[in-house]
Structure formats: structure tokens, C-alpha cells
Length: 425
Image (tube, rainbow, N blue to C red; front, side, top):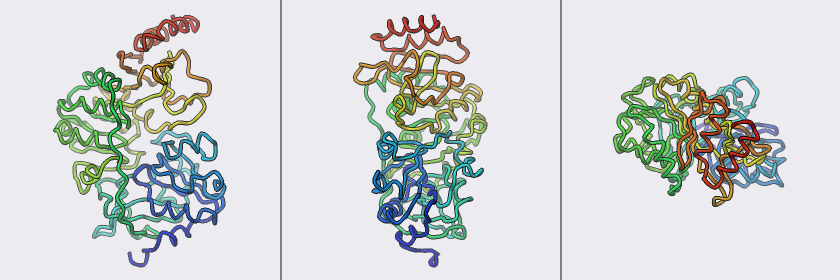
């Protein structure tokens, strides 16, 4: 270990011009390394940093130096969205579950890995517990692996470990892991949750996306019994269900007794809960999000948000017209997994309007240029504050009728006229 310990500055000098640096999701990003990469960025040419959901806006997010070090988003968030919309950050569209296979097959390069990790255990292992995701696949391909080892990172169980013998360099840090609180929940979110929660049976296994509406649903599940967790993200909402006894994992039909995820994003309390907890395992996203694997859970419930849904049921969940807003992520993975599951249910949740009620989110056709996330063939339940539209197995006419029924009343007449024009009525 001592021979591999080095400064962040020396670690960054291991990067070569043209390298693709793979960084884990969210809280798994290594701040000391990315700050130092930012400081040295003008000494490189053509370096890319690929990541889902960057959490901090590092100095390398700079249009003037993007030809030196350029962000390559697999999913946009607040830190990277402006760069993506302006065109000086790149975007690789992909299902979350398939990013590891892109790396395995060489379709997406992985020259360097920069990742947050736990301290090394007595056996020489580090845990990439905050983001196993696609990073575990990148470890098998990378020329250089640099870990930012931090005692504040939990050592979790699962397939998220790497041995010191595989590591090129270790940079030590003790700064707090970034924390993200629960999203704001308002009356619209609570109304949507009130439609979804009664449709979730005791003994269901949950996948819960991030956002106000999914977390509003979580808050209404505290009286449920024997829920299980098979999800891409573990956050504080799920932790609340564990603490109140609603989540036991006892009735899971796949990996019973264990909750599984691929990345973590929440509070210090969540990270402490993860540390050496045999109830929780962190695995690569190619395992967690694979619809054939996740769908082995009976009564799998998938809850994810969208920005817009058209009258056929196509979901535009990741862009505002042509402008990128987020990314595909795991929405499609888990919609398909729930469709495979015996007794499974997938929910797409969204407020009926945007811009203070001036725009309907239920639309005749998606806006020109909108990135389609979940297709009309996969969609099942769509929920707004006005109710639930069940679409799977329904005709175009039936779908349009059901979706108009959950649109805001101010837009229903217009939607009916457009449905007639489109021959959906």
C-alpha cells in the first residue's frame, strides 16, 4: 500500500492525452482527484471524463478549456446540464444496464478510472460502495486505476471490491462524502403518491427513482409489510422504510433477505447504515438493472418520473424538446423488469402541468426533437395528480382516452380535439 500512496497531483499526471477517464455515479466521484484534474487541465489535450450524474461543478466544466478536458455525460444533472445544452459537453445515450457492456466490448473506452473508495481492509480490499455501477467493468479495462480512499466511505458487501494489487495509485482523503437530502414534496406530489401507494401490495419488491414524486410514494408506504428492495439507487427514502419496519426483504423471490442496489446517494446516516451491513449488497449495474435478473422478483414495482407523455404513451423523460435535461438512466431497464415480473407493476409519474399550469405534460405528440425514453410498447401505468391510466394491452384509442382522463381539466378539450385529428378517437 505504501508504495502506491501518492498525491492527487502525481496521480493526475498518470493521465495521457486522449484518455477517457471513467468516474462513478454521484457520490462516488472523487473530489480531490477531479479538483486536481481541473487544476492541471491545460496540460492535457483531448481528455474526456465520462460519468453519470456529476454532483459538483468542477473547474474543468469550462467551455474555454473543453478541448483540454471535456465532460462526457451518461446522464445530465445540475452540474453538467448547462454544458450539455450549450454543446461543450458530450452525451452518450445508453441504457444504464448496458454501459458496462459498452465498456467490455470496447465501444466506449475506459483508459483511466478515478473513483472514491473505502479504506483498505485487512485483506487488501477497497469497496467502491457509493458507485459500483459501470465502474467495476471499467476496472477490468483501465490502464490506470486511481482510488481516492476515504474513511467516510462505507465498506459495503456485494460485488463492489477491488484488491490493492489491481490498483495503480491511492490518494488519501478524509473530507465528508457529499450528502443529498430528500427532495421537496408538495401537494401535487402527495396527490400522485396517494394514487400509487394503494396499488403496491405487501410483499412487493421496490425500485424507486430519485425525485419528489417517488419519495412522496415512499412516505406513504410506511404501513406496508415485508417490502423488498431491488433498485439502482439507495437513498434516504428507502432507509426510512427500513427503519419503520416496512422493508424486511423476507418475501423477495430473488435474493431474499437482502436489499441490493448499484449506487448510493443520501445522507451521512445512509452511508453509516451501509457500512458492513449484511442486509445490503452493492453490485454492478449490469446485474442490478438487467431486466431479466430484476424481473425474477415477483411483484416488482418500478416508480420513475417523466417530463412528458404523449397520447400513445411514449415518455419523454430526459429532454426539453431537443435540449438534454437528464438521461435514459435505469427507467427503461426497470419498466421492462416490472413487465417481466410475476405481478409486477411499473409506474411513470408526473404532474399534469408545467410552468405554473400553463403547459400540459400530457400531449398529443411529443414535442419535436424530444428524446424518447420509454416506448409505447413498454409503458404500463401513468399517474398524475388526477388519477391512473393503465395502458399496457390497450389500443391507441383506449390509451388516448385514459391519458386525457388524467390530464389537467384545463387541457382536456384541446387534447380530445387533437386525439380526433390523430384518429385516436
